Length: 294
Image (tube, rainbow, N blue to C red; front, side):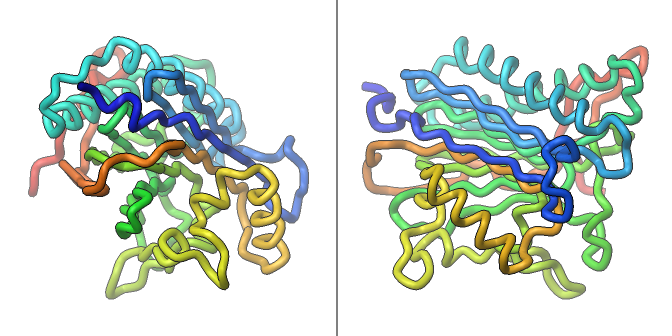
């Protein structure tokens, strides 16, 4: 018996809005993409082009498209063994391979040094999932049982939050996680952090405002349900702009299950492990390996 009828991953919602001062999609350097099928499989990705790089918009689009294409290929051949923890770890390994293809695709492009972006991506396969962040993009994953959602991102310097690494960096900050029994997942650019995340301080890292995703606010449903509705999403983003929460290009993709999985809830198999580049020939990379302490 498989989980496919329980974890359909058929709810997909995404939006990208430019920095409010511009109101011009031609200036928006973010990109996003998704794919899903009827067999309980999905890919979601958000990329945030570096504002300091003149072709980062093209780079973000290239990385997003590559991750969707490569991620789909992975999922279409991925076979669940029934050992769920092992399956989750294998899916994470596959996602890191997808990311390495995307990085190499950028590095092979003309003007590649001008095309850097951050990345947040997830592979969802029935009851197992894996996600990765490169730079300060972020991922949220949760369930319909009200468990505290998991948040993943990387802050280089708490007092200089705009400093980060990109797909074109020599040593990008790559973090990857995996687990079982999630029923919704968000990948987002750092433009979504202002309303959702308490900024890092000298004493602590970023902290998710997780009550938004568990109880909602002022009688509203949990935010993940709001963001599955195009109309409610537009209203939410308009509210954020009116309240001056948006100061950057802002992009997210949500994926969720229409039906309710069995009790038990979200379980992490490996959480926020850092990975480093495995150098290859001719300036390309051979993948990523787990970073060893020290």
